[in-house]
Length: 313
Image 1 (tube, one colour):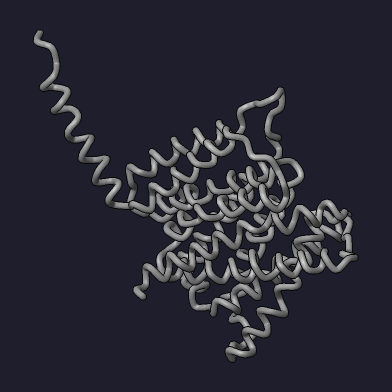
Image 2 (cartoon, helix red, strand yellow; image 1 turned 90 degrees about the vertical axis):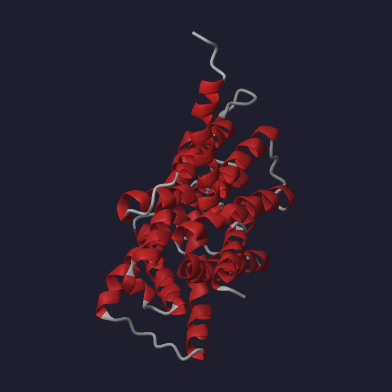
């Protein structure tokens, strides 16, 4: 299996796994837990698993001095991304929230162009227009109701912080030298501190009580956390940040499917169209240079064709 194909497979698994977040989180909310409590246990329960993997692979736990700050920043970014996304489930349909989150691949592409001088592509502009149309479709009023603007804001903050996380993993030479499992261990450890601080500032810490709640928390720790973040990091190292982010098209698909079949949350035709536009916008980027060649080819042909068919003066 070549490097690119392997990278795409890891990116696909990462996206599909991350899309399972609402299927496990929303039932915990219904049992009385809040986002901060859910995320605290999600991160804490992931630590022993990663520690066990590190021990079995003979990976040392210590970090170099130069690694501490970058890893801490990654942990804080991931914690804020998780927290704002999980908070948004209280204001938005979980499937819609996960679809809105899918703007992060475009943010990754745009930030890589402006901050790290990645080559500009015409397809990026088309993607931004399609993404905007998709967001308008998702936010269009129906039955005298509108999608919560605060919920949308929370998802946008989640998308931006997740995009910054992906970019930092891709561009930081220090981060790239840290073993994947060790990196994720400390990302979750630093992220846990964010939820602890939030608790100390007055947010209630609600303990899970039943077996089903613990199972949901364990599933959150394994599937959309350890599995997804591990595959994401591997994919970034293999194919880069932009392709990894773009391949996240599977994320809203899995989230919407699970929201409909597991959470029984309704999905309207308008929301499906809006989601498809966002997925289409990011999927176009997968075509990369091929799409740009077609666009530029049409652009070169159009003025000539227009000139030939102009009516005589």
